Length: 255
Image (cartoon, rainbow, N blue to C red; front, top):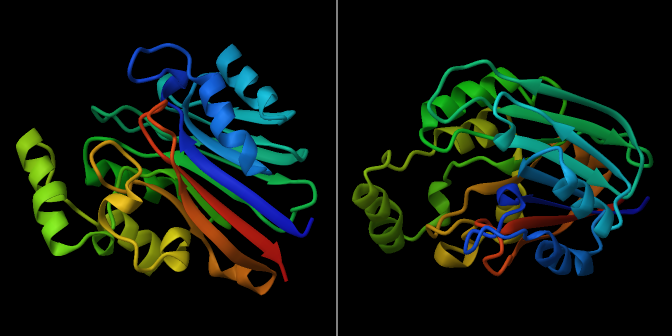
């Protein structure tokens, strides 16, 4: 296979946040034209919604990664057979619940290991403990995707950061903005932020992936794959409000 197109998206348990009706058909209509080989999802349950979502996208190969609360489970669906997969769930007791890391390899792309996770939505310290427990860099995960619930400082102009990012969090009584997790992944574990690689000048609301005007959904790429694969595109998928996150898409071409 010479081209690989993949995406990650938080599907909000396949419920439209406006009316809580099923959003499966709406999501399929947005994602189907993107011609994806693989999609990594967060907030799924192993039920008919997940099965119908995968099959309506033409993905006959799909897996579910359970964690303590099924609400925060992850999934991976693919056009290509899944030759290996494993799931790792933490056992930490946080108000945000337990989390998991699901990983796999595909036929035709057996030199790549894909991983997806969804980290704590309340605070950075639990997120750090979770990702350090999963150790994606030690497991040789090449492409790490998911809803990290964490920020990158370079995403925001000073004015936008002060008014929208810091201001919203102060108004809502949330934790002050922190960047420890993305710094750990990119500076200490050497992953590259795919979106920033292809869109270094985009900032503020143009890169938002959640309703609060921030980017918390990522595709991270380990540089070891650069010997064989070129990252040719990375963009935000506008989900038009049918789920509470925008998606992220990346395309790679074999050298």
